[in-house]
Image 1 (cartoon, rainbow, N blue to C red):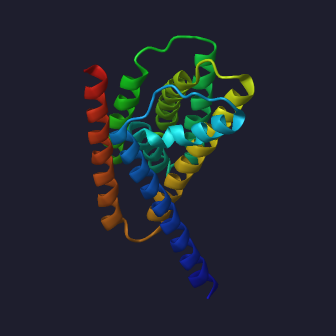
Image 2 (image 1 turned 180 degrees about the horizontal axis):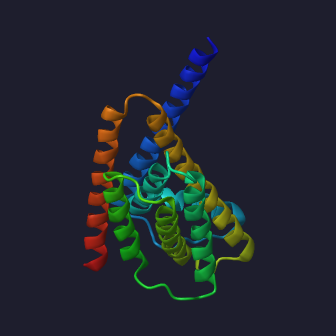
Image 3 (image 1 turned 60 degrees about the vertical axis):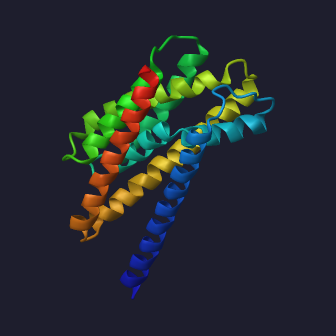
Length: 216
């Protein structure tokens, strides 16, 4: 009975993760189609926190990278370290931008990372160290790109923004990781592994579209 109860709870939790990520993808699609200003007029810490929570998911290209690194970290040795390296590197990227150090072509780098992660989802997982390194690089450029939208913001609002970004990225990447872990533990890999491959190709397509847009 206990095992059945835990199994049911795990299934409900997975469905909630899936529903949350699906909702975020829908929001991201709508925002990407409508277009949003790249620079945010943040006047207080509350606005900074809200924009921080929104920024990682209103850009479809950014969201694809976050979900992909979460899925890639599932079922891998030191998977939590891989996911955490992305989130911490994103914070470092924002700090680098605040110190006005230049990282060129970040939009192109984000698009390329979406393509790379999408391809990796369709292939056998490489060594965890490679995944952690790639995740850290992707987080760094994504954090730097986030920092460009808050130029001239006050210190308190800036800290609130960074907190919001970190919370959202951590929640999304760990939710994706949990979904991947549930798939790995379940005895239905033949069906769901095909879904993961399709998701990988979708992320590749998203990256290609944004790469063409960034280059053009």
